[in-house]
Image 1 (cartoon, rainbow, N blue to C red):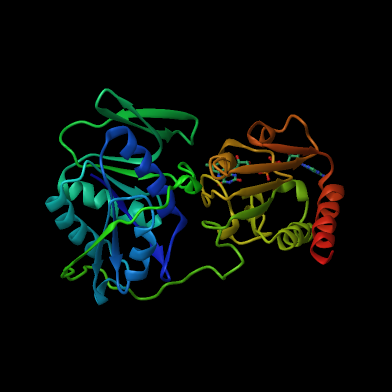
Image 2: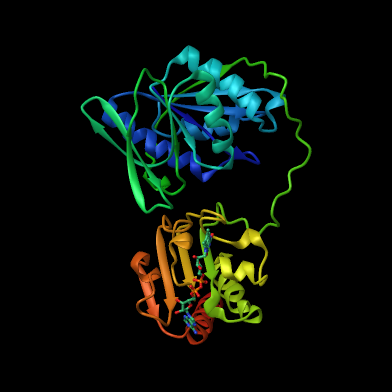
Length: 324
Ligand SMILES: Cc1cc2nc3c(=O)[nH]c(=O)nc-3n(C[C@H](O)[C@H](O)[C@H](O)COP(=O)(O)OP(=O)(O)OC[C@H]3O[C@@H](n4cnc5c(N)ncnc54)[C@H](O)[C@@H]3O)c2cc1C
């Protein structure tokens, strides 16, 4: 059995859940094992209904009012008892803030291996080999899991395309009774980023600006383009270091890791520390006056020209299209 631990927020499944399901469906075909999605939360029946329609075999719901807020203690306690009972082959978790928080605790508490940040896998005989990126994504490391299952794996956002999930299933939904453990941490407050500003983690379109914009005032070009295309704004580190924008806008190894459908890099050279934060974007467009800039090595489309000419022209075309 392959377990997918569903991630959700505000009564909606997060995009990483579909990515995990795509990963699980591939594993299911290769290893001939059924897929079970596990949802923990309060009032999550509707989510189970959504998952049920995917081509999977079962949905397990652990529904309890005390699970209305995520805590690692309750997740570890409940998942441990489900996993001990069900004995899955692999447990897939998102390599997200939440997944990185509870998956290592869970794996350690069960004394089973965890491979973190997986981007691919292969089947060698009957063995599962998981690939993860190391050294700022400069190298891929293939890891063979040893010992008895379950094996735990966290999947990097963007590595397994969500649109590859097969629907058309009618999975059995099993509701289990749970009694969450008393958490050792108390939830006080959730401080989210202001909506529409820098919540880049699930933004489908990001327009990022770099040092090529020369000065803070010019960043309005990026905001205008982002607005015209319906995207969020991101930035390279020098922009943040120079205090043109707050830290939450930064994309890269010491900022946010993003995986949008479209990433437009404007006046960004493409240093490795920036690339590791955005190179899994489905489509990358680079605008840079230097044809040799490393960003073009990862870009699917490139415009070699002065951004001060290109960006306003692009914004105008998009605005005209909207009003046409
Ligand atoms: C430990 C560590 C962690 C780091 N973490 C991060 C991180 O998380 N994120 C990050 O981004 N960086 C990070 N960096 C910094 C990184 O190494 C680069 O210095 C940084 O990404 C460069 O930012 P940039 O591309 O905006 O600037 P530059 O490298 O200066 O590039 C500016 C680009 O703009 C182009 N340009 C200039 N004028 C124009 C114009 N008129 N029209 C078109 N193009 C133009 C230039 O050709 C150039 O390619 C980190 C560095 C270290 C050491």
